[in-house]
Image (tube, rainbow, N blue to C red; front, side, top):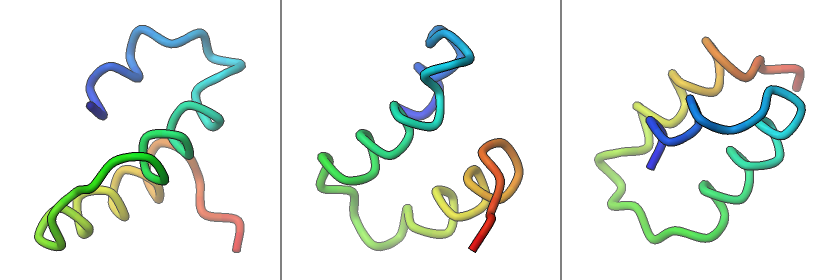
Length: 46
């Protein structure tokens, strides 16, 4: 589902990313990809 974020308006990307991460049952093996995506494209402020 992460590639679908390319079609989301810029103002809603972070909200959509959070929704995808919190409302999908990804296998644990996918977590490093999600972490990399967040760090690279969303930004890691915490």
